[in-house]
Length: 123
Image 1 (cartoon, helix red, strand yellow):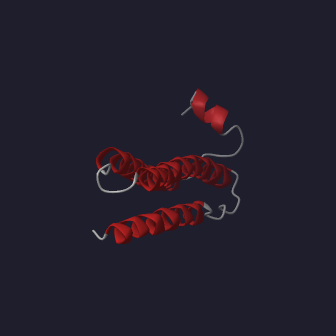
Image 2 (tube, rainbow, N blue to C red; image 1 turned 90 degrees about the horizontal axis):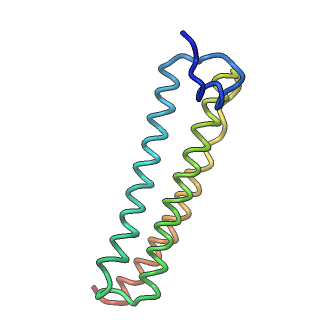
Image 3 (cartoon, rainbow, N blue to C red; image 1 turned 135 degrees about the horizontal axis):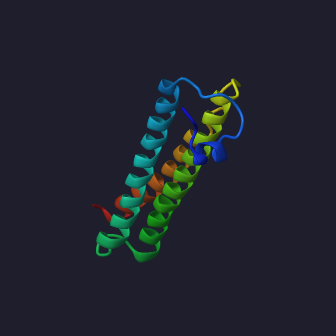
């Protein structure tokens, strides 16, 4: 069976890996995208619906942190999906997962800010 033009463009070298591994890589990518979507929704909801609850500057900062973390994690997921697929096709070791650290750092900062907002408000 011939490879499609997009597959040839994205992965010009190497052999087709076992489809189970490719599909597992895709499921992992989709899980990271769901996480990014949840972060995006949280940031939008915070900005849209918490206007009467938290001060504008702090609410805005927390929303931007959540949306920014969503952006970074979705980009990192895309690059990781490609790097893993390339490594499998070239029979090389899989790359180290760096996006978990990025996601954790973004969530820690946003969570600390939101905890401070909640405790400062006395909610």
